[in-house]
Structures are given as C-alpha cells and as structure tokens.
Image (tube, rainbow, N blue to C red):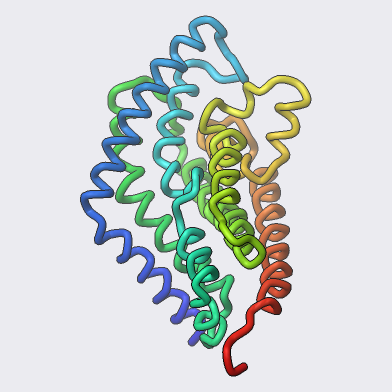
Length: 266
C-alpha cells in the first residue's frame, strides 16, 4: 500500500507539473488543431482519389486524423516526455540520487509519465478532437462497450510508449550525447505509429512489418478498436505482449546500465 501511494503521488506530481505550463498547453492545442486541419484536407483529397484506402472510408480517415492529434502529445509520439529529463540526469550524474531513492527507477518514471500523459490527453488532446468531431463527419461508435475497450487500449498504448522511450533514455549510459537517439525516436515514432499515414494503407511486406512493430500499439490499434475495425481482445493481447517485452528489456538494460554508475566515495 505504501508503494502504491508513493507512485500515485509521483503520477499526481507529473500531472501537476505539466498543468502549470498553461501557455504551452494553449499553444499545443492550437498547433494540433491547425495540423489536424492540414492533414484532414490532405486525407480528403487522397481518399477522393483512392476511396477506401487501407479499408477506411473518408469519415474513418478523418476520425484517424483527429485521434492522432489528440494522442500526439499524450503518447509523446515524437518524443518530448520524461526521456529528456532522464537522459540529462544521466549526463550530469544526478541519476545516482535517483538510484539511492527507496523506489524503483523504472516504476518511478512510469508513474511520472502516466501523470504527464493523462494531463496531455485532457489538457491538449480533448479540444482538437472535439473540434474535429463537430466540424467534420467522423466514424465514432455509439456503443459504450466500444468506448470502454478503447480506453483500455489507450492505457496500454501509454505503457508501450513509456517502455520505448525508457529504453531510448537508458542509451544515455553509453552515449556521450543522446541527441541522435532522440532524433531516431522522433522519426520512428512519426512514421511507424501511423501519424503520417494509417499503417493499414502501407503496401505489402512494408505494411505487415510496421503493423507488427510496437509503435502500431500506440495509434493504429486504438483507432481500429474505436472505429470497429478490430476485435478488442487480440489488440489487448498485442499491446500487452509488447508492453511486457519492452518493460522486461528496460529492466535488463537498467540492470546493466546501473553497473556503469560510479559515485564518488562509493
């Protein structure tokens, strides 16, 4: 119970931290709305030329765009979450303080990032999504069970997103400069999650490959569950399997990385 209260407090702290940046949140809402409009009209033109591309009709394609804008900051698809702070603490040596805390390093940052993600969903994601739903035809379900299944996929997507970025952040133990790793995270996040184009529209072997990667668990699969294009149970299994695999890999890398830490006097 004590550990649960500790990590709940860390999550609440992560929520409050991002809630203080009101101007940045407002700018993010504006940016996501503008980019959503650009993508919507691009998708509408594309779907005019290629009806039912990727198995979606135009309303589903529009829904995919606005869901992507709602989850862009929530899942830190392009980066910009805790991983920057963690890599900086590794670079400066402040990570030694974190390792002395009576808390698990991975669980601490997971709780912190979940708090951040919830705030970004509520503070930055809801308004662009609501704008899109009000201004464009969308394909949203009327069944509460589908919405509940979508919320489950969203929580699992948050965990997968954290696990990917935790592994990237741990590379700081071996790299003198983490800029390159963060750039790779940005490119793979945008391309492999479906933010550029739904993964269902990718052709042949490329499409099969990207849909098997963990980034598919972030946007593509929650979107398919929400729009009734996928059975929730296999999606849960896919997301949970990647979450377990990536968190386990993070645990192993963390164990190897912490053996590299040298603290003066000990």
